[in-house]
Amino acid sequence: MLTEAEFAETICSHFRASRSLIIVSEGSAYPFFLIFVNDVTFFNINVTMTVSRFGVSLEKDLLDALDQYVKENRFSNRSQAIRQLISRNIVEQKWQCNNNVAGSVTLVYDPNRREILNQLADILENYHQEILSTQRLILNKSKHMEIVAIKGAASRLTDLADQLISIKGMQHGKLSMSRAD
Image (cartoon, rainbow, N blue to C red; front, side, top):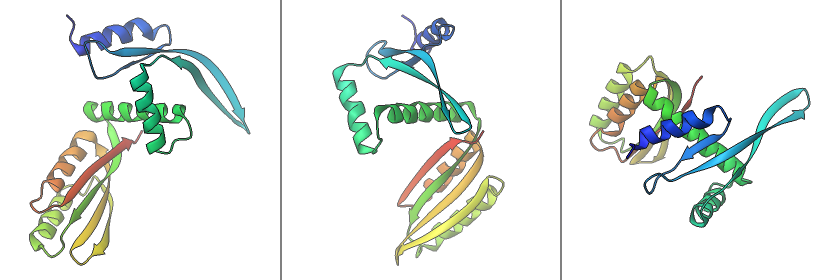
């Protein structure tokens, strides 16, 4: 039996020439669906945008999950949701490939704990080349939010976020990254 990675590469290689998009999803042995593509060109005031229309076959429970995702994230249609999911997947692959990305680290902490502020300052100083800006928001007397805008190699930004989030006493931390190229 092929590993998941070998299976995905085999399928991708086979369909690359036919301009079909393959999405491999989580689940049983080789769960996947194929999206067959036809090119369509739209013209909009001096802007030419080529998009592709396609048909998708999904199990009912997966379609229901997609519809729920559309509703929860307030997309106007399924196409926007699928586009966002594919973009997120590409970004995550870029993280793994250590490409140049941009993003933010959002932190929530108690400003009355000086050791948190000192460690935060030390870590940010060590990563000054990746930091675009910082913003501190006072939520209340015992809770501040710090948003650190960052840009650089994905592995370095992940290391930065891991160090910040793991500061003892940090109440919340989240890394968000997007393509920067």
